[in-house]
Every structure is written in C-alpha cells, then in structure tokens.
Length: 135
Image (cartoon, rainbow, N blue to C red; front, side):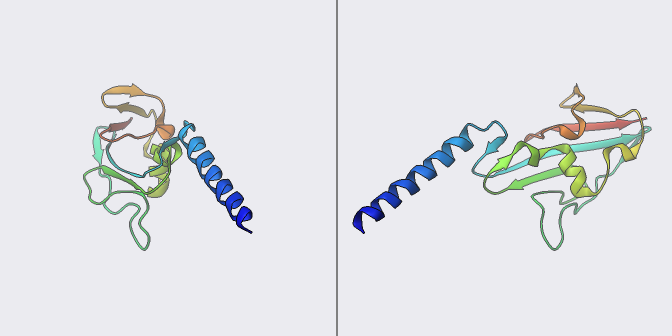
C-alpha cells in the first residue's frame, strides 16, 4: 500500500511537470497566468467615425473580451491559460455579433500606424491602436 501511494504520487508529479512543460513550449499559448490587456479600436466608414458601443460582452455573464464604455477600448481580461486565438480581433467582433465586412467594402487596417492585412486573425496586444477604414 505504501509503495502504491508513492508510485501514484510520483506519477502525479510527473504528469503535472509534463503538462507545464508542454504548455510552455506551445507557441499558441500567450500565458498560463492570465492577463489584463487593453487595445483601442477605431472604425471609420466613408470618413465618418463609427462608435464602438459600451457593454459589448457584458451582461448576465462577463466575456473575457469586452468593452466598458464607448471609447473604443477593448478589455481582454483572461484568467489562467490564454491562447492566441482568444485575443484575435475576429474574436472581439464575434462577441460583438458583427461581421468585420458588414461596415462596407475596401477595408483597410492599420495597427500602431503600420498597415496590416491580418484583419480578423490579428492577435491583439496590450496598448495596440487598431484602425479599420472602409470606403
């Protein structure tokens, strides 16, 4: 019985170690400790600014990616393991219930002033300034 408990304990520690090592080596994992980041999104359609509504992703259950006010600040508040797919601009639009192409044609995107073609697959980072322009 004593040896069985020792074997089970060693196997448990080994499994925990393997899990932590595999998470650390996975490039799709941003962090295993959670995060609280903010990006800013602005949308312009034919020269007119489109407000980003307050309360996106908030309600009966708070989504980890959401807005609090109408300033365009996207809050990314995740506990535990966070994957790159959790932080995409497309994920935010999904929470919002909007399709990125629904604002018009000839979409252009800049991130921190640089042109980007990542669009919905863009992985947002803390402090990003994301601008979508539609003609």
